[in-house]
Length: 163
Image (tube, rainbow, N blue to C red; front, side, top):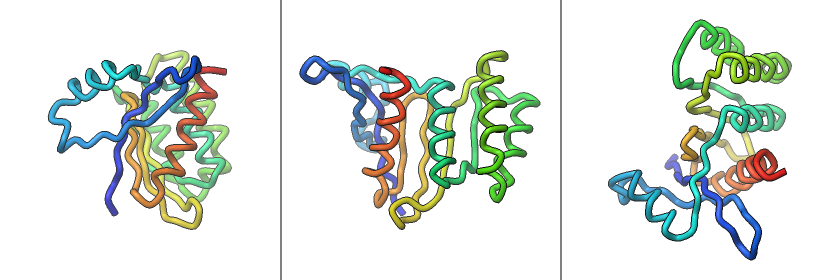
């Protein structure tokens, strides 16, 4: 199952700022910096996925019955193990969603802990789906589910940033 990767940007179209995903092929783009610079020259602005946005993505996809199977933080501390304990219990993840979200919000606000990457798996439109998104805006989704997941991610980011 091949992954399709893209990078989240914003761009103004007809006077309205929109969130878009631009395909990113690490093999063709030798240097990430050059890729971002080229997109910037085309009018795109880089979007960083803050912990606040990551938490909204987590909440939204758990509600859609996805399994959050890993979270990476910029730095690991004791709270990291508490979070991992919650998400490792996949069968109870949906009922522990509120507890997980409150814990992540507390950590983001009180300890300035930053979420680096989140990983999900589940069924979407009757297709097995696996994806991750990271703080620098890189999104990787199995090819079969890419367009549907991209659409959901864009919607969450636009709601979190522009509304």
